[in-house]
Length: 231
Image 1: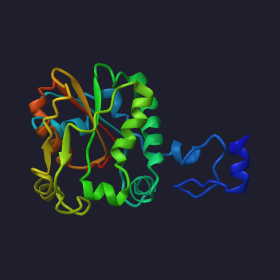
Image 2 (image 1 turned 180 degrees about the vertical axis):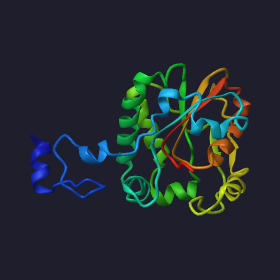
Image 3 (image 1 turned 45 degrees about the vertical axis):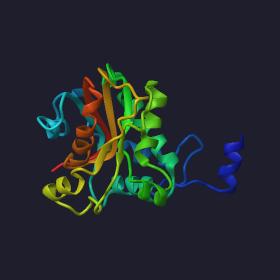
């Protein structure tokens, strides 16, 4: 009843098409949701285009999946832009919950022990007010029941945005930008870790972060993101 009253007073709009949302809808309308370009990577998570990016680059690489393809200047772009720059951390939890619900019956989360969101630098987190990857991780955790670990690695530097860089430039930009905290309160030895980020393009950020997790002696790493930039 309260939600219905609030919708009458201040109608909510789909962040993609701008149409009014129904009471049961959140962030985007059902029509826009149904037309998002799903990858279906979770159904063959050991061997897909995204997983192949990390073969030979990450020790004990296991599975990789993205919920949808990232295509610039489309409704997917609007979705991710709103998540990162419109000061709505609740979008992250909602999308994390949504994609985890869609993937839970594929077996993608089987064997995974905990979720590690890719960290932001302290400066960027302060400016944005939140880490979108952490919000995604919380949404995934609500569905899977997996614990979220946020202090195993830190992001110590970020020379420039990755958005307009090519593959080599992205790798150079994030090289040595993460540091292992060697936190003694964190026990990741022998555990299967799920790294979560918003978009995977070249895999440079994920790879750099994974390198800093080696001291924890994990048994496997899997990767999950909202978007995957094909091509």
